[in-house]
Image (spheres, rainbow, N blue to C red):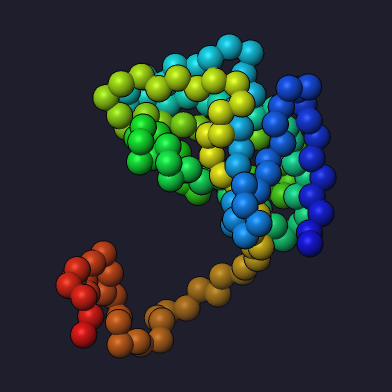
Length: 149
């Protein structure tokens, strides 16, 4: 198992944790001095009270929680949000309220999930043309929505 250094920046911060034995993402909780109201069709930057030291070659991805999206229309507008290996500041979550009612975020609310993923930096080779494939330039739904037989 990969070990990642974490600093609790606030004494009441809840550190990320897996909710089940085989969960892909760790729950990330809000660390607030006072509740934050996210107005409909607005965003709010929510602190978590912790900072990470990710190994080179890894990133942390912040993703929405499905229950918040389903029940309250709360999501992350930049999903997945990337935390780079060289970032040392507090992890913060941008929430967006797609709902019709204000959404209250309380201290300790699980507001996102975090997945640790390997990444690789690449070098581009500029060429005059790309190799041909059967798909070619087809994209953006070019195969339709009906089931494939």
